[in-house]
Amino acid sequence: MAQETNHSQVPMLCSTGCGFYGNPRTNGMCSVCYKEHLQRQNSSNGRISPPATSVSSLSESLPVQCTDGSVPEAQSALDSTSSSMQPSPVSNQSLLSESVASSQLDSTSVDKAVPETEDVQASVSDTAQQPSEEQSKSLEKPKQKKNRCFMCRKKVGLTGFECRCGNVYCGVHRYSDVHNCSYNYKADAAEKIRKENPVVVGEKIQKI
Image (tube, rainbow, N blue to C red):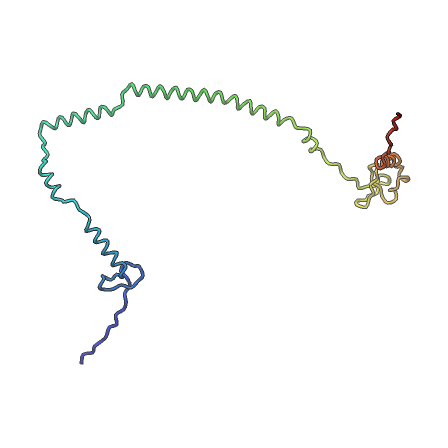
């Protein structure tokens, strides 16, 4: 007995690769791609192609006549064109003279620029050799902080007491009457009182 096998038709995709399923009736393309294909065929068929017979007829009707007399004429025309393309010696000499003149101008301009640059460098070196007062002050070494008692020369470090006279003292010699301080406290206090309490003077009475 013949065994009949039913092959299930597997759906195939469009042959153009658009992603939709194709149909064998439309050459394996989907309906949209098939319509576009038909439109392209119609537009290509509608274009008027130039007849090839006209070209052949024109070539037959206009044969090329090449005789022995026409060859020298063509050769003479080629010689004339080649001679016209060659540069004349007068033009070459003028170009050489112009290039020499331009090179001389460039050399003179360079010679003028060299002394100017030398003057600028000399002025810069002069200003660099003369340090300003601010630079000299900044180069001075800062004063070392005193860390010994001015009277007993005991090392006090951070525990020292700095007096208004400018010296550092230990806990014993920190008082002004002990180390015979030279600072005038009375004059300083009087000046401070004078600044804080200005004298108020009333206006003078004008006599009639």
